[in-house]
Length: 114
Image 1 (cartoon, rainbow, N blue to C red):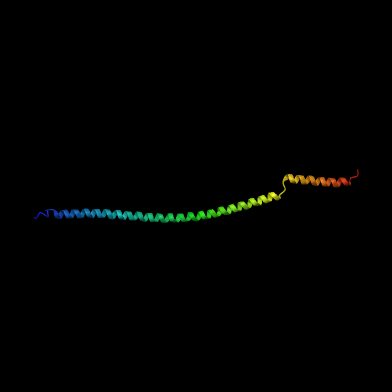
Image 2 (image 1 turned 90 degrees about the horizontal axis):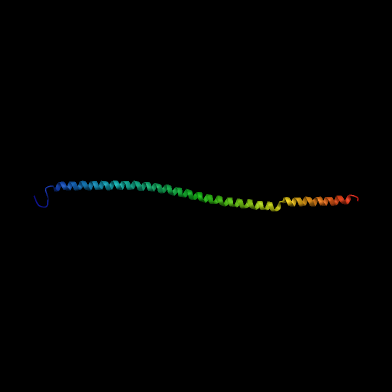
């Protein structure tokens, strides 16, 4: 025997190779798990992108609906104001009836002999 190779040198090589194989298997398993997690995240990102797109479209539609509603309310308010301004109030109607009765009384009283 020489001093470089101890009697169990062959056995220690096999032990080192077995340990390296175990370490490589552990690394391979962790890489496989990482790939699965990344694929899951990729799917989740796709779902989030489609959800964001749908929410964006709904926000645009909601804004358009709000603008249409605001325009309709403004038009209804303008129509109400126009109707209120052109309509006779109860007090105006009362004065016009009193004035008409006064005119009728003046005409009728002119035909009545004293």
